[in-house]
Length: 179
Ligand SMILES: Cc1cc2nc3c(=O)[nH]c(=O)nc-3n(C[C@H](O)[C@H](O)[C@H](O)COP(=O)(O)O)c2cc1C
Image (cartoon, rainbow, N blue to C red; front, top):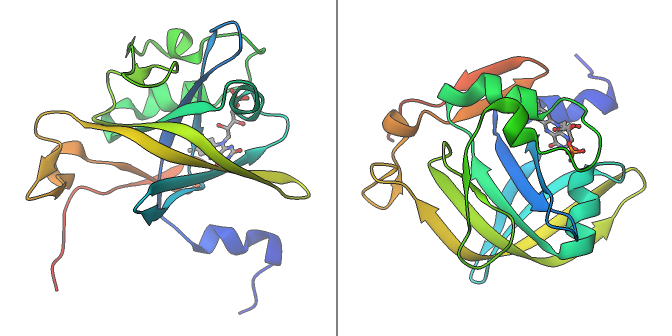
């Protein structure tokens, strides 16, 4: 069957969900769930995500050129969803969702305590598309909580990353299958 072209992206699923934390020029914290996200290079380590021109995330990244990518585990799915609601600029979604944060090492946006993996990033480049913006960050510090890695890779049984299918539909990535 042929699928409407605007729905084509829904066929690339499930995708990991991250909470992108940013700050504005006055240091006010923002957090937004994003599932259009992927690493694209390992040396240097570059990750990209896509967002709208209207998002506070884009405005903050344009102003301060830093962000933190926090991997979302299944256990905070409700809090993640709250962060995706529309709040006025300057409102800290982490506070609204009851999530905790701590200072990052190399950038101003904070790391989310409940997220077992945090990648601190500095802006590398921005691609301005007609509707959406692709933001690329160079990872300057990578953190994994105890137990979040196993044999050099993500310990999916322990982390249980939440994966996005579409809308309010998710998959839990909680077991591996080898070749
Ligand atoms: C699971 C999930 C995934 C999302 N993925 C994206 C995405 O990849 N890009 C995007 O621009 N918005 C995405 N959104 C919507 C934004 O999180 C939402 O518009 C949010 O209010 C933007 O926040 P901000 O204005 O604070 O940046 C997603 C929402 C949810 C719940």
